[in-house]
Image (cartoon, rainbow, N blue to C red):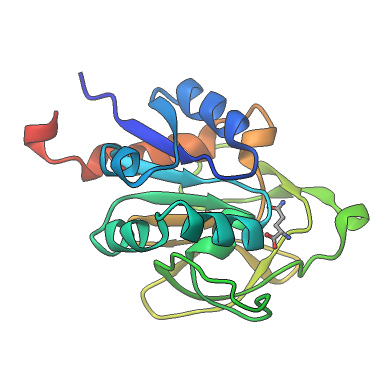
Length: 201
Ligand code: GLN
């Protein structure tokens, strides 16, 4: 059966919600935090949370380099909010020492939509997601200032880019894992399925 195994990077953030959303989208989902565990999954979600903390813990757990290498090799990855920041090749206002895994040629501005109490929800039309707009939950969300030629803009809100795909890497400023609507996770699971080699089926 072609059921992909998808890890959720479990260093910090809303790991549980992603595990539930991935399972609902027909993937086998498991938390991962060690290099050996990351080597075993077909794809990886980087959750929302706090990108500065995820960055620090990734170095501490020895997954910064292995993960960068897997992303470079084309492992499908999906980052929400802090996870989007972690997939940006460049952040505009990093904390000192803050690093990213990279993977998407984009410049991301952290906390661009304002502070915690300015969090909001909005209907977002996402390219590749059929039907009604997605309910976008924005919590101290970043936006994308600009993308390179290889990156495809999948959604905008208020004139700002909030969803991007480049090859096997997908990123959203908002949190579909918090809504009970699993269509964006479904899109990612399809990307992972499409990437699996016949011998791994
Ligand atoms: N502002 C957070 C950061 O910089 C992201 C917030 C979130 O993931 N909800 O990492």
